[in-house]
Length: 173
Image 1: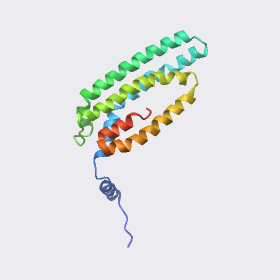
Image 2 (image 1 turned 60 degrees about the vertical axis):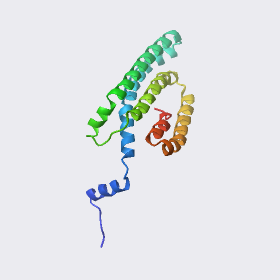
Image 3 (image 1 turned 30 degrees about the horizontal axis):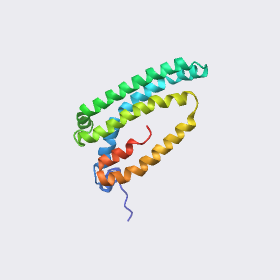
């Protein structure tokens, strides 16, 4: 007799496979904290066409002004995202997951700190892209990803979710 799993049975089987709520808690908290990075991407990438034109025309003085202005807005946005994650993050997490996921404020803080780091990274990331100098960025992305993978597992084994958050902080945006 052949036995087939109905969609409901498949979901039940999958939920038995992943018994820990840890992956859901980690990914949900990381997504919540990194919403700010999406806003930072919009800020920084909106300056790219102007930077490309200015660098192409050799107007480095105005290109530097555009970069400084964009970097300032990026850092302000990163700081705002950091503060929102720390103050409203636990409430947003509870509302978003209908109370199914709760995490220590310190863990949300680790994710929020990574947003601050990415605010600095993203504002400086746009200049080489605008100047069509992708090679160095590729090396940085690969290096960051390798270090993140190498750090994430041992840190998560010793520090739990906080270790996984620390390991993931080095990952490229």
